[in-house]
Figure 1 (cartoon, rainbow, N blue to C red):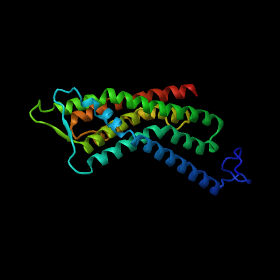
Figure 2: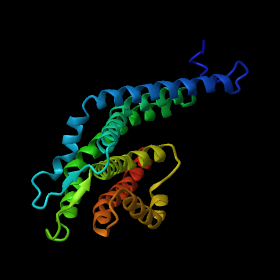
Figure 3: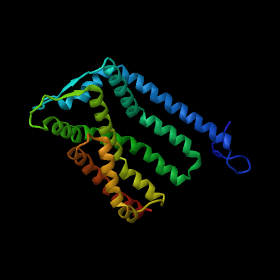
Figure 4: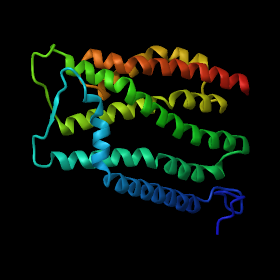
Length: 247
């Protein structure tokens, strides 16, 4: 049995490769198992999840009609929604498994930072998804549905709409992690505010590239997505500065 006081180290003080590999295997097994379990539960409620995803389209003046254009369209959508929801709800469990895997290799001060990071990562991701759902998501859908001023009857396929929605909400929620990530890295001495400011030009280009991947191929949607991402980047600069002052 592994001695938790020695972590992944052998009797001579060196790293025990096989013990480390066994811990990695167990971490991956329990993480995947938790994700699969959450996805199965989410699949039982895929119709409710779809209604939540479709709700921003309701009440629009030129609301598009979501259609199915192939026999497996609804099946594909239901699995996609279930897997995305399963990933969302399994995230705290997966993060906890990662924490348990890394814990023996961390110093006591690093463990304290990591414990708080696990909880804040979960909270900020959920907060980002909720804020994105009520702000960026409906704004983007309203603009896309109204483009052309009602000249055409828009019909969006269910799989394309689901894929776009999941990428947009997931990407926006993930960006909410950036200020926390910079705080943790700054506390560990890996980055600082000056470095992030030096990287700002490249970060702006990267943000617009990410926004182009996550949104439909039009400049307005990309700008709607990129603007809050840039705000979060410079919020990360501020948290890095605060973290270095706290050291």
